[in-house]
Amino acid sequence: MTVTQAALVDLKGVGKRFGAVRALNDVDLMFHSGECLGLIGHNGAGKSTLMHILAGTLGADSGAVLMGGADVRSGYSVQVARQHGIRCVFQELSLCPNLTVAENTRLMCPGLRGFGWRRKAGALIVATLDSIFPGHGISPGDVVADLPIGQRQMVEIARAFTCVDEHLALVILDEPTSSLDARVAEQLLRHVRCYVESGGCVVLISHILGEMLATCDRIAVMSDGCVVEVRAASAFTHASLVECMGTVSKPQDQAQAFISRRNGQAPVVEQLPARQQNGQTVAAWPGEIVGLAGLAGQGQSQLLVQLLRERVASGQRVAMVAGDRQTDGVFSLWSIAENITISSLAALRRGVLIDPQAEQAMAAKWQQRMNIRTPDMNNPILSLSGGNQQKALFARALASDSELILMDDPMRGVDVGTKREVYAIIKEEAARGRTFIWYSTELEELNHCDHIYVFRNGQAVADMPRNELSEAQILRSSFQEEVA
Image (tube, rainbow, N blue to C red; front, side, top):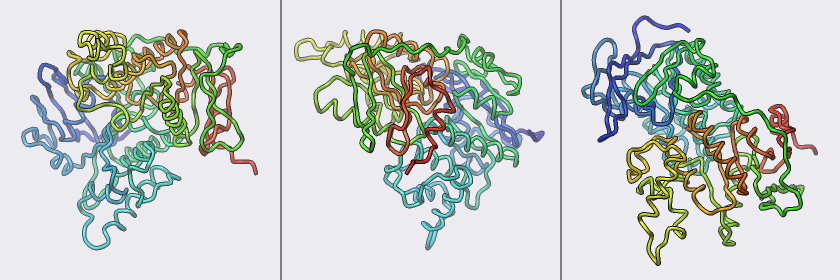
């Protein structure tokens, strides 16, 4: 790491409140050229709020934002941040879904103007995509709404690194790998190191501890709106990082021996993927947790949607936890409580009306069980951090009476402590007879599944019980060429 003497940006005593909620309290943090600074903490710790202030989309209530020794907090904005070379890729993607990839690039690069700007914008974004994500398969004329979430994330990231007549000094990446499979995530992190070694600065927010330890030069830990620790990444271990976050460090769950739950019972699910050519079905029995693995965009999410539509159409009880919560998950104008109870209205009826006391009791029960961080469950759902919004989606599915729970890469933006809590709840519910089908881009999560199907090109190409699971086997199945 090559770090300049003067900080690129120096935040001193930064504070921010949202009504009665104190999001940031007296935060001091420096950002240097030539380093990757990791920012980590539990959901609601203040990471995204701090980055919104750095990016100019939120104003600090107190403290100083120093650039070149001058305090720019008064009048600081997105435009001022961009003038200083600061770009941000937020966890909730900002692409316009009705526009093409090239047109979205133009929105970030006002220097693209005049005759032929679409062609120039397309060439620029494709060149950046080629540099960061070789083999990305994205065309500049693709409409963003038609792209799977993983490719949308790739476009958002590439757009942040694309400049016309501007300098780029600092890029904030908020959970950038949350929708990317392991291969594409590795491409991005390799690019981050190259960019940093060329003198740039990257702020990396991630709940994947291995990424942080392997990629960052320094790591700052946040808890309850404060920076509680800043160290060189090499001074942390997996366990000490979890401990600093305020989460009890537990040993990783060991892969348990496979116990078949299929003794004489009929399967809850026996589904033929839409593009399957050899008759292989995806099957799940009562009480099973079935994993869907493979590279992103290979048909796993499509299978879940197929199952959801068919079950709803036939009147069967089914619930789904979406990974893309803004598009497929939260009702943004409703409260946290309403978002949780919407799938359980039949159980909350008193005559023809909903019993408000029963609704509040259900919301309170799941707030406690999922540890949703909010002072009031009647607050808007968007008042929660991204990870806490995801907990609310889990609560909605689990509070329902559905026997089958579908999970579409649901741990996006969820901190390590919460993940372990949710894993335990999923196992408790499975032990009671509920069935889970779980698509995950994190290989580590598949250790919590009883059975795993690997997808490639829309088809299930391998199935294995947990005791046969290995990363090598999944990767081999993910990349193996079709046999003629």
